[in-house]
Structure formats: C-alpha cells, structure tokens
Image (cartoon, rainbow, N blue to C red; front, side, top):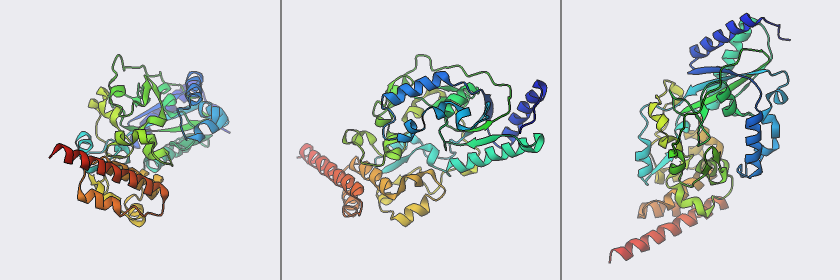
Length: 365
C-alpha cells in the first residue's frame, strides 16, 4: 500500500518526477487527473458512427479506455510523457511522395519500434520513483491497452488535440510519441493545454481521402494509415489511387500542419532511419521474400503488418506508378503468390499499368 503523503511532499515529488523524466530523455512530463467524461462522450459518438472500422477492440474495451480507475484499480493520477521522434537526416518527405518509384513510410516507423523504447524509459522512471518513496501502485502503458492517451496528455498540459485528432504542441508540432504511467499517488495536476488551431484547415485539405470528415473528427475507414496498417483485408478500390506511393502509414496531415515548422529532429539514436527506408525503391521492396522482410524490419513497427500486407501495400503503390517494363515484371513475379490478398492486389496493379500504357499510347500517336 502506498504511504500517505502531505501536499508539500507530493508537490516536491512531482517536480522531481519531471526532472527525472528529462534526464531519461523525455522532452516533457505532465500530470493529469482521471476525469475523462467529455472525451468519453466524444469516443462513444465516434464508435457509434462506425468510424473505428475493423478495429473491433476499440468498441470491445468500452469505457475502460476512458475510466483509468476501472482499467487499473486504485489509479488517481496519470503521468504523461512526450518523446520526440522526427528522424534526423531523413529524405524530404514531400520529395519522396512526389517520386512514384519510391515507397513512402510514415516518419514514426523509420527507426526502431517506439513501443519498447518509450516503455523502457517509463519503467525506469517508475523505478526511480519507487527508489525514493518506496513501493507504490502503478502500471506503464505505451499504446498497449485501452488508454485515451491523447486526452490524458492534453489534460496533463503536453499539448492540444488538433483538428486532425493528433496531439500538437506549440514548441514541438506533432512529431512525438506518448506514454503513460497510471499511479495511485495523488500528485498535483498540471493545467490542461489550450487549443491553437484557430481557423486553419490545412490538415483537412491535405488529407488524400478526406478522412478528416470534420474538424477533430476522423473516419478511420478512409484513413490511409488505417488502410495500410490496421486493415487486414483488401484495400477498398475507391482508395487505391489515393494511396499513391504510401506503403506504411500516411503523414500528410502532419506535413501540412503549420505548427510542425517548429518541430525539431530527435536526438534519439533509436529513431534514426534504418535500412534506407526513407528512400526505398518499390520494385526492390516487392522483391523481398518473407525472410528478408523479417530481417529488414527486425525491431521495427513495420513488422506488425506482416509480409503479406506489406506486399499488398507495395503492389497498390506500383499500380499507381508510371508504367514501365521493370514495374510490370516485378508485379508478374507476385501473381502466383500463395496469398489471395497479395494476388488480388497485384492483379489490380497490373490492370492499372495496362490502362496507363494504353492512355500513353493514345496520347502519343
């Protein structure tokens, strides 16, 4: 059982926690309460609209996501942490998106899997707290359980939830990961962040599929990040051309956000670009066998989608590429893949290549 402490002791501990967090590499630490009534209502409306798509777990976990004390009994506060991830020396994202021969990978997935990196840091922070005050009740989360992390981070003063539904900070933009420690310590809470999107609609206008159906409201079923990462089945035909050359995730709403002009690259070695995935050739990526996929994505968030969905995404990207013998030959090698998911997307890509070839021939008599 956690020993009761006076208000001055808790205030001093909170100050120390923030110092220890910075020493561990976090850019910001904040303390939130656990009253999430307003975010809960917004979440339930979002679920009722079906905007979660095939992410059944979002509905299955229900209100545990918005009621920390029901997920972890005894929780009275949440320590929220921010860790910047924008990789240094990465290729210009807009340049990659403009080159149909390259595959675009979301900036967060260019380095090592953030789950382990952030979790280990948070565990060390919890250990540091325990070393000073003795045993206490806590649990660490990094996108690993039903947690309304953005709402908690907003209440902890780490930023505000922007119109694209991603957390924003005036000094750091949105290129950062979040993590939480649920605790039974009644620490003094921070002032919630205030919104600063104003009249800006850059993120809504930049979304390739208009997945941001209204400010602060995203229909995941239209989102390219959902379609390339979360969706297990076929990518709907209506969104395949909009996919362009995005093969894992989509950053367009963040790239368009004016606040990201202030974002700084990370100093974390783990988030540096690995295996040249910031400028990878699509034809070469389609040629990876499963062993190569596992080798090149070891320790990466990309591995979670598996080889078949990786090939599915790349096939669509190649279908959107200018027609060429190299693209056609690469796709044909996958026409006999064992997975129907792969074969169907390859066949679609070859059909798209044939259409583009006929159009080119018609315009060049």
